[in-house]
Length: 222
Image 1 (tube, rainbow, N blue to C red):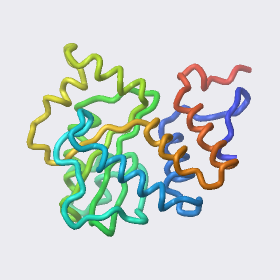
Image 2 (tube, rainbow, N blue to C red):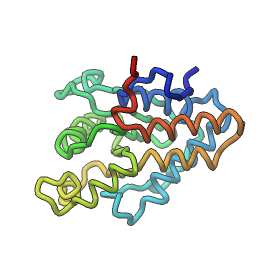
Image 3 (cartoon, rainbow, N blue to C red):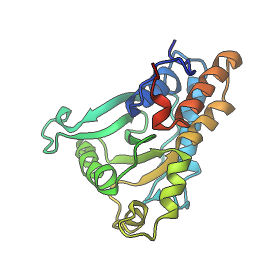
Image 4 (spheres, helix red, strand yellow):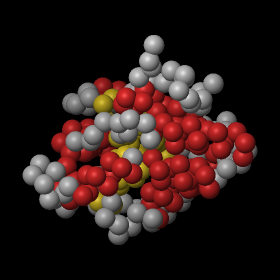
C-alpha cells in the first residue's frame, strides 16, 4: 500500500518520498480517476488565483492564446546535465511539469520538513531553469511549502537575512515569474475533486497526516 499511515508504518522522512507519492502516485497520475479535473484545478490555483497576490512575483499568468490543458508531462529531480549545452549541471526542479499544449515548463521546488533558502532554492534554481529557454520562453518557478513554513517565513520578513525579505527585494525584472503555494492548497484541490470517495478520502487523509508530521514523528521506536 502506498497510502497507509499509522504508528507502526515505516515511512521515509525524505521530501522526495512525499512528492513522489503525491504527484506520481496520485495527483498527476493519469490512471487515477479525476485526472483532468486535478490538472485544471492546479492551473486555476497557479494562474487565476495568483494574480496581484503577495505570494506571486513577476508576470505569473497564462499569456494570450494559452488555455488550461487536459494533460501534462511530469518528471522528477530534473538536472541541468540532461540539457544539451547546459553549463550548470545541477538540479533545477524537484518536479518539472511540461505543458506541450502551451509550450511551457513549471519547475517546482518542494519543501515539507526542511526550510527553504533564497539563494539556493530561488536564485540558483532560477539560473538553472533559464537553461530551458532553448526549449521554451514560457518558464515558471514554484516554491511549494507547508502552511506553517509559509506563514513563519512571511512573519520574519524584517529580520536580518530573512529569506522572505530577500525574496520580496528580488530584482523586479523577474526573468522567471515565481509563485509560492502550499501543500494545503493542493490537498484542498484534492478534497474538492473527489471522484471515488472512499478511496480518495483515505489518500487525502494520508497526505494530511504526512505533511503534519515533525521529524521525531518518523522515528520508529524498537
